[in-house]
Structures are given as C-alpha cells and as structure tokens.
Image (cartoon, rainbow, N blue to C red; front, side, top):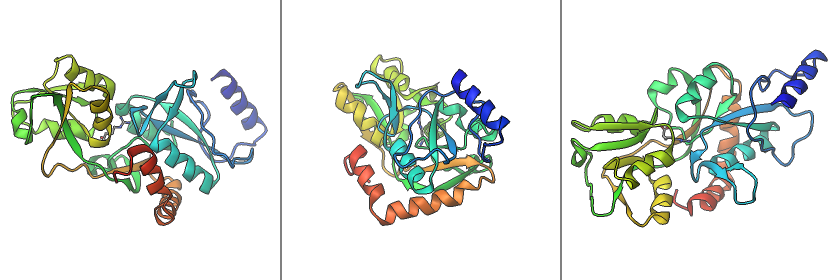
Length: 263
Ligand code: ARG
C-alpha cells in the first residue's frame, strides 16, 4: 500500500499516469497478465473472494492468492486488451459502491446483471450462466421455495439470492457478508436452508457430506456479467474480448477447468 502510493505519487508528478484509476486504493493481491509490459495501464478489479470456484483465496502454495474462474477470465481479457490487473477484495455488498466511487475500474464477482443494479452501473454481456439451488442438511428436502415458508434462510447480503428469498412467505431472512458464513449457518443448524448458486453449492456438498443440494424447478439466476462505472469506456472493449473468447472456445475451456464443464 505504502509502496503503491509512493509509486502513484511519483508517476503523477512526472505526468506519466494514463487516464485510468488505480492509485489511492489499497492492494491486497495483484495478478498480472503474462504479456504485460510497463507501458500498460493498470485496472483495479474489485471482487468478493468468497465464492469458490469463481473467486477465492488459495493458500495451498503457502501464499495467499486470489484465484478462480473470474480471475482467469479477467486475466484473459487483460491479455487481449493490454492492461494489468490489480485485485481488490471486499464484501460483495460493497462492490457497486466501489464502482460508483471510482475506487475500482471493473467488478468481476459472479455478479448477475439485474435491472436494479443497471441503474447504478454498466454491465458487459453475460459470460456465464448459472442457477440457484437450496442448500439444506441431509433429510430436509425442499422442492419449491414455498416449502421454506416460516423457516430461517441464510443468504449473502446484497445478492440476488437475498432478493429471491425475500419472496418466501413468512421467511426469517439471515443475511450475511460472505458465502462460507452462509453455509456455516446451515451446517451449525442456525439456519434451515441457504439459497446459493449451484456451481458454488456443489463444492460445499462435496466437502460436507451432511449437506444436501435441492434443485428448485424454474429457479434461474440470469448469469454473470462484468460491471463498470456508468459510462466507462471499457464496457464495449470487454464485450469484444468476451465475444472473441466465446468464439474461440477459451471461455468454455475455462468453464471446464473450474466448473468441470457444466455450462
Ligand atoms: N450472482 C449473485 C448476485 O449477483 C451472487 C454473487 C456473489 N458473488 C460473490 N463473489 N460472492 O447477486
């Protein structure tokens, strides 16, 4: 952080900074596209790294690194558009505000482009489709959202799953900052169920045999898109890069790598 601020100050002083943000923010992690050169601008990527396999902290190498499908997608776009990536990790509920305050250049966080969010930020095209499921302890089978009437339902604060759960009759909503704590609520019987994305829930069910994944008919989620501050010049460029990755199969390859081909 200290070092970053000094570098930014120096660069500004000699008028070397290009017209992108990236200074004045704290760095928690930085992934750089392989083809980067020193003349490339740095874009601040804000995410909520609590969402395996989209974005999460991997400490297996002894170092704390943010990795995942979204991070690979961002780095592939960075390589095409020639910019460097600086990752900022924050709570999901703070991501839109970070864009509005121009504390980030883009958000990639498995974020669904909803009508409400579109009033505050711009979105790229959808780069991945997913659906919601209900996570419960084994033996508590849920077939429709109404089966959860009167129950305590854990969700991530500010997520579309929170909005979906709000329509359950007499629900006791249990909104929490991060997905691991949402799942923990179910594991420890503090909540009866959690509404969560299928691709994320699958990993938790694999590592916790006492959990059960309940598919709900007709429950869609409308996919993930990249978000930008309103009017950002990057939105169109990202769309072109995403389209190319759809055409040449790179996006499917990354989906296979992180989701086992479930696209
Ligand atoms: N797709 C959902 C939404 O946009 C949840 C995304 C949660 N992402 C995360 N990185 N925790 O509301």
